Amino acid sequence: MYEYNLKHFPEEWRGRYEEVQLYVKDRDNYVRGGLLGEICWNWLEIHTLMMDKELRGSGHGSKLLMEAERMARKKACDFIKVDTLSFQALDFYKKHGYREFGVLDQVGREFKHHYLKKDL
Figure: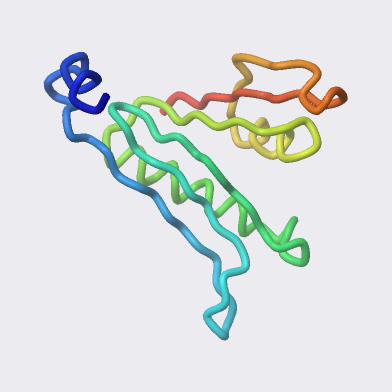
């Protein structure tokens, strides 16, 4: 499948893949939050952004997101995409300039799955 997909990649984007791993650690080097994603072709996709409950609202999540955006710009990404459930971080991403481009209803019957993008 990789070889098949590679045939369809624009020449300048072939082999362009990089994992993104950012962490917030405490004084004991214990991970208290992080952002995991990947740069592929001309975008960064955020798979996970999480923070320990005690640190939510402290600005650490915003700092992780801003660092990921800085990395994406440095790697010449055109946009960042992320998805979140209605009870998770929709307002957080919107506050940071992400715009919704799709929604799936009835996820778990009572929630929505939101897809967001931010152009860089």
